[in-house]
Figure 1 (tube, rainbow, N blue to C red):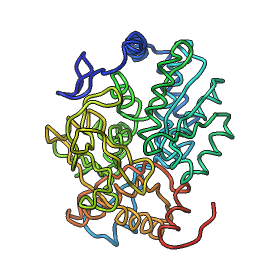
Figure 2: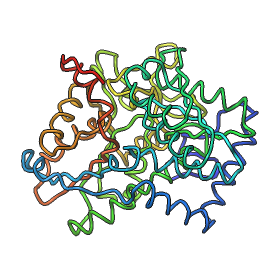
Figure 3: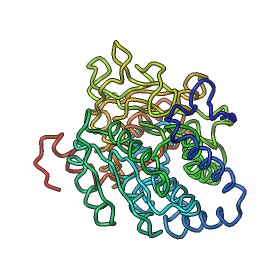
Figure 4: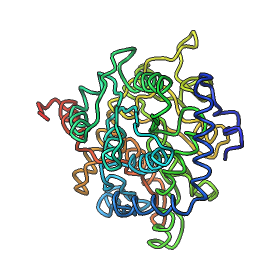
Amino acid sequence: MTNTAGRFGDFGGQYIPETLMSELFDLEAAYEASKRDAGFQRELHELLHNYAGRPSLLYCAEKLSEEVGGARIYLKREDLNHTGSHKINNVLGQCLLAARRGKSRVIAETGAGQHGVATATAAALMGMQCEVFMGREDTERQALNVYRMELLGARVHSVTSGTQTLKDAVNEAMREWVGRIDDTHYVLGSVMGPHPFPTMVRDFQAVISAEAREQILAATGKLPAAVVACVGGGSNAAGMFAHFIADKDVALVGCEAAGRGIASGEHAATIATGEVGVFHGMKSLFCQDADGQIAPVYSISAGLDYPGIGPEHAWLHATGRARYVPVTDEQAVVAFERLSQSEGIIPAIESAHALSYAIELAASLPREDSLIVCLSGRGDKDVAAIGRYRGREVTE
């Protein structure tokens, strides 16, 4: 729930340079108007269905469920969307809104590259210029996605400041946006940043749970015991949770990156270890050092190694409506391998974090229950990295 100040309880808000305030006010007004605009909603619906391939399947992983025992495991197959992840849902909405606002250029940050690919895809479709900021470390471990973006006509900037990962890509994208707001829209990829981005991105991603709720009722005749999603900034989880929040008997579980283990200090588990702070235009929870500075984070997953979390997730945690659990690299890799071998579905390593905990949870629930995992993306991009993690020489 958000109020007129863009707050989720004590979290959220707009902590940004004064030069951006007018642009954010205009963006909020345009977004609110778009929700009442039948033409906008019709065009977005057509793009999601005819271009992105929605609705995505709700697939019962029968073999995996039999192996695990307990509740039936259903996968919300966002990996089957055009471009291979949930990111296209938000990007189509934001780029359509940007075009209607007269913007000719879009910029984006990306970690694993899926948001960058989706943004480059929508920009190509709509005839817009596109530039994507990506940490140098991520450009190396996600080289395939870098080429995909360039193939789609985008210019990819390798960010060499800081830790050279997602946090720094956001910094550079925001810096670029401040200097060129007249013709440029920043397609923020997650439920983070200053208002209205956390609300707007959640709303564009809420199509995931709107479909999943209807699909699970049709398949089983009742709501699931839980819905589970991985969490970095938190967009796929926000979309997966949105239409289940009012269903108090449905557990909401976010799975964050525990990296090499919480005790090691090499992780990106914001809920488990973070403190309240202000960063990237929002008040939320962030991994911080002893001096209150944003701490370096680590994950095998380029899409989850962000040192904070979207303000709505901080609020869901604070109110107890959602639970957030840490999942290590090794646990995620085991789940990555297990789904590949049991169902012939190679998940993104980000999604494998959620799958790992879902397997554990399913085993503890009765057979008549079900749970839904948001399979937020496909794992083509991760195969070489996981091979190397397992000591194999794999070329991309």
